[in-house]
Image 1 (tube, rainbow, N blue to C red):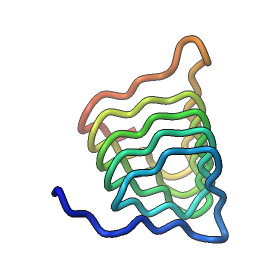
Image 2 (image 1 turned 180 degrees about the vertical axis):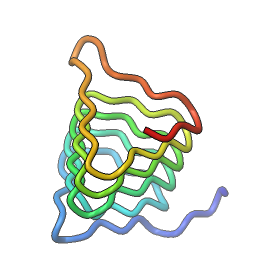
Image 3 (image 1 turned 90 degrees about the vertical axis):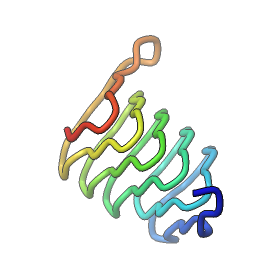
Length: 97
């Protein structure tokens, strides 16, 4: 797990002002986020002001704002999850939402 492939950022999506680790597949929109290894953001997903830990999967059509995911979280297709700037929504490890 120490050697991950390069991160793929789809030119159709938007990735701005974010810190993205190795081994990610970013096809949706990611803004102002910290994204750990092996995270997948599918096309059509919109993620802003979030921290996504290792192995998180954000399915297409999902909107995340001020969310922190622990390792191996899957956020299902078309979900909207929003926390607040001072009180983020935290999702525990190995959870499907």
